[in-house]
Image (cartoon, rainbow, N blue to C red):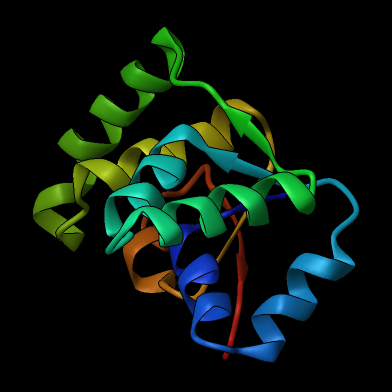
Length: 125
């Protein structure tokens, strides 16, 4: 399963349900886009270190940005931006999940629900 950025943010804010979701998932993935968003959201080097340590200690695999992901993300932007205000980062995360045939765990279902070929696991905090 691939985890959306919002799941990590909820864990950082102490949401135990989000932490349980991660702990109960045996094989964990994240898009390189999510990784970049988490690093960009850090306020200092200590938070960057905590983020990297968390990802490492829970054995997350970071999925790279590929040509196919980029192409699919572009298609998603063309199809869904006007309808649902899909942003480029979310399109990349969705395309990563779809291209790797994985579920995307997110609590931001409204961002992703219009994407027909995306498999969602909606997290309710």
